[in-house]
Length: 343
Length: 124
Image (cartoon, rainbow over all chains, first blue to last red):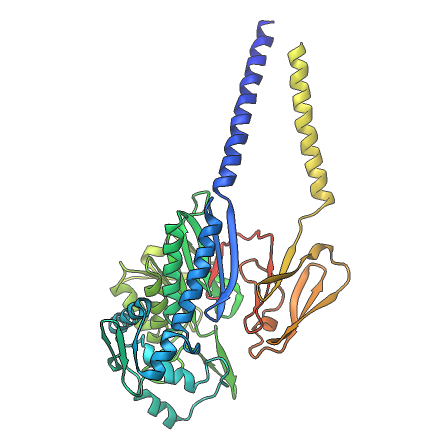
């Protein structure tokens, strides 16, 4: 009788614990409610997934901000700052545009001109804008366009940007990074501590997954981007990949991709198939992935070593070798072998 | 004695639930639901595992035309009159982090019930 009374007490306690557990689970479900959005902007597809009770409002605020940025930086939208600047050569621009052009000037300087937003005439000559036909420009056309290239042709006085008369700019290699940085800020401002976004393939993670583990970000295999070359585990980072495989055309058996080397006027071809940059700074990661691709394998490895405290990178060479920076050793995995970039 | 009966009943209920769950798993295998979106709107959700006859879905507007081929367990873009044909060259939809996208025509085909170990993909 005494034993039976004990069991009854235990069952009673178990029941209370179960009720508490169910209540906690319901609360947790509410806290970690998930909201997804997928939309077209900046000539690409954006996906945002956020967790938390304010996730829907946060993601809607992100969509609104991306659409605002889209109208500022488009080369082809007649209402954008960049379209007006290229047409008029002088513009009292928005604070966002000024900030991004200033960042571009700084990054161009750090990368010794591998990053250059004045590459617009060359991108146009190769037909990499929508509505244009892809063509291989004649050498004399490339030589002429090269004379128009260089960040020294841009001047900023407070909120006014001035271009030399033959200069045009394209923020395509940095604008998505800036958008990504705004996504991060808006999510944080809306009390989101767990989110992941893809801004046309530029990844931004906020915090960790709801279970506290890191986000797993796959790097597309440059030879078949339905597959993955490797996986990185990150939290609170931007992860951006640039590769020639992303946009290209074929002419007379040759492949011509969209990342134009501002020094040669031709698609960059210095031994790399893709470059992935991992950084706290989305804008820097976006611009740097293009810059390292333009630099080529050896110079990129050297740059990675020189600025090892500022970012991490995964380089995939033309001969399919994978190189990673030292800090990624514990957060990168691949079915293929890889080499750590060391001194 | 009375308490022992309750323990036996409690255990039996748990065992019964487990048995029902296992039968459900065998009888109703995992779904493979895809969503087809055009200009941001859902066109159709389909469980590919329930598809028995092959069929085509045609989407067209002022931007152009896409033809989607649906068969058992499989979906792909059969044809599109977009300039780059990236959507057609994508082949079958195999991963929730690599949806089939036709950017010029604003068409997205993606898995709705993601079960990938990967959260997101960069560079695709």
